[in-house]
Image (tube, rainbow, N blue to C red; front, side, top):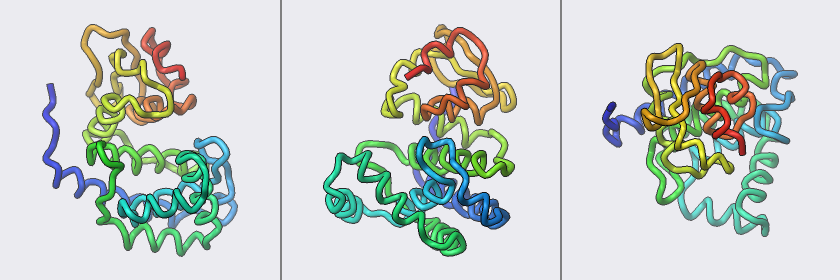
Length: 212
């Protein structure tokens, strides 16, 4: 069984992935930023704004922003993303780069969850824009395992019982005796993040556990 990487290693990956995503976003044209992302109701620019918010965040700032909206947390976070998403795209990309070293994660969750946010939301945005995404690798596995363990990903709580295999990256997450499903590693991560588009790219009985 793979071991969890050291905390500082994971945070260095988070920073590197933010910078790499910013470079991919540089290539998007104006129309791409307005397209719907894989996050229901969010434009590509809203997803990027959410990543900027997370990268720049501290516990006090998150509490302040959510409280200011006078809404349940998920609704408040969506409103913040849409408001920040109205910023000029180049400014959003610059802010993402500038805050790449940010180390905020929701209290009680591991740094690997923050890695998952960058990778999954990066795919949400890039797929929505019709742009190439990054290939699955060990970082994708670490993020997928964090999502699987937390069971906090938008109702996909049963997913922890499935054995999910990245057919393009040579890794699996979940119990060895669990119902199996396989497909691209990016799809595994997206499925664990509650994206139907990810589940649709997987095959096997384990997909039944990925339905919300």
